[in-house]
Structures are given as C-alpha cells and as structure tokens.
Image (cartoon, rainbow, N blue to C red; front, top):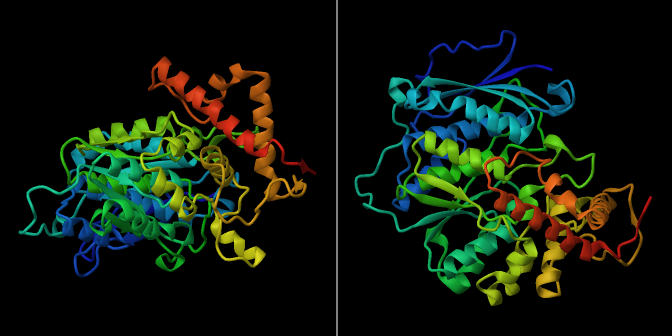
Length: 454
C-alpha cells in the first residue's frame, strides 16, 4: 500500500509550497486553471453552459466541484489491486484551494466521513486559500439576467429512473434544469432521452446541461493505472448539481430520481457487503450531503422523491404513460453496456446484472412487454450457468426472495446492512423496509422460473 496525496493547483501562479501530511506519500499535482484562467477537465465548460443560461454559481460551489473532480481523479486512476494491501482500501489525501477557508474548516471531517462511507477508502481533506491571482476563477457576465428560468435541478443520467423523474417534473409544470455527466457509451442515451422528452414538453436544449469531468492516464505522470469500480462517482454527480443549484434561488431542490430498492442497495448475499455494495444514493449518504450543503451555505437540498417506490411502481405511476411506454427501451440501466463486445454485439444491456434484472422486472410488471434489447434475451429458454456472470445475480435474487418469504421480519434488519438509517423516523424506516420487500418480490416474479445450476 502507498498513501497518495493529490494537490489541486489553480494555475501557473499557484506555486505556494504545500506541506503534505504523510512523509513518503506519492504526490500528484493537478493544475485546474490554464493560462487562459479557465478551469479545466470539463469544469470550465460546465460553468460556461450555466452562464449561458443565466445561472451564476457561487464560489463555494465551484470549490466543491474542484474537490469532486479531485476525488474523481483519485478514485478512477488509483488501482485498488496495486495501491492497497487488501485489494480494496486505498489511503488518499486531497489538498484543495478554496475561496473562503473559514467556511470549509468545519466541513472537512464531514467530507472525510462521506467519502469513507461511499468508497470504502481512507480519505483525508486539507484546505488552503486560493492564491491571489486565482481568487476568481471565472468572470461573471455583465448581461446576466436577474433570475434564471429554472425552479429546480434534476439529475439526468439517461437511465430509466431519471427519465421518469424528468417526465414527472415536466408534467407537473415544473421548470427543471437537467444535469448530466457523460463519459463513455453507458451515458450515450442522455441526448437521445432529452430529445424524446421534447416530443411532449418542448425543446430540451436550453434546459439540459451535459458535463464531462474526468481524467485519463495521460493526465498523470506517477499514476498510470486505472480503477473500474468508481465508487466515488456520485460525489461528482451531486457536486455538479450543487454548482447549478447554487446559481438559482435560496431553497432549490435537487431531485435525485432513484427507486427505493436500488437506493438502499441491500447486499443480496453475504459476499456483497461493505463497499462492495454501491452506496450512490443511500439515505445516509444523501443526508450527509444535505448537511454539507448547509455548512457551505449552498442553498440546495437533495431529494429522492421515489425512495419509497419500487422501479415498477415508478413506471406505473409515471405522469405520462404514452411517452414513457413509447421510449422506455431507449434508456440505459445496465452497469456495463460495453461488455456486449465480447459477444461481438453492439453496445446493449446485458440482461443479467443487478440493474438489468431490476429493469426487466419493473418493465414487465408495469407494461407486460419489455422492448429493451438484451445480450441475454431470455431467462427461461435454457439453464443459466451459476458459475458464470450470467447466473450470479439471478441466483442471488432467488436466494434473498426465498429468505424473505420464510422470514419476512428480516427486511427491517437487512436494510441496515449497507449503512445506518439514524437520520430517519420509525415511519420512514418502515417505509424503507417495505419498499425493499416489495422490490425483491418484483424481481422474484421475473426470475422465479429461471433455472440456475452450477
């Protein structure tokens, strides 16, 4: 194991000595501001898009975005196989220049707690003041409108849940600013889904921002590996939404559309525990984000309006059934659509990962017929091999469904395995237990006739 220290620099004049806390740590410096005094790695482009829509982000939100980008750099470029003793837990220090250090000093411990929970690594955050020449990292246009034409922000991944979330907001006459992050083929559906929304609600181009914030091995001299797990990705997604929300009204809601089953992400079997189970929208993590936004005086609150609904219930209750049924097959849910290339197929849903199984079950439950193209088109035409990836999660869902059928009172215990629910009332916790139970039953109805054998 090697501890890594990532230092964010804001430009050629940001040369102040940064004393790293850990002697012998591998130090990586990343310059975020180029000679044109514009934030790089996609952040400057995001700000430009916001300003063109009369949304002017706050300094604290920009600092949060730089932090999130640095988290992304460490999370995606540090291999767990080579940089940890246990093939998982990495030790990472981040050094961030901010506009108002006093505002941030009370937030570092909370951020460390959030990142440790999210990724399963050991993070430390160190704050310093921006250098004088980079006190401002973008220029506010003089012709900026007094108020932006949006009343909320909604994350828009190109997945089925975010498609439903956007439809419901638009159908309710809300004025959401849709925020997407794209990187590879798994996010290729975002522009297409936005164009489909336009069929019912008008041009989405002025209401949709796609950011591309990320790093490649060419951006680093000492860190050339990559890490596919990307447990920290939601820290970036939420930060990008916070940047947008900071330029709107003082009490902006950031909608995070995610069904309750995947949000809780309860381990389906004893082998998927701890950080091996993603915590992208877990209720504990969402609560910590709202705590952080309050500490940084960013007037926004994250909300998941579907936390007590299964994916099938989301589809059935969607406010525009005609539009949803017409384009449901064009959304992307699969954890890795690119792996179809191993079967010499074009990118498509695999049909057997956890998100695909939940998707298949929800569409069949709500609509009866699923138009999605899968690499594994049928779950019943042959026996599925339990020793291969195609059978792993099917079998896990069958096992957890059997456990819950025998002991329904396990649900309130199992939902606490991914993380604490201490922020929530007994009524809310009962709601989480109920949606977990119904969500498993929904998938069980899909896989109960599937034969899975070693």
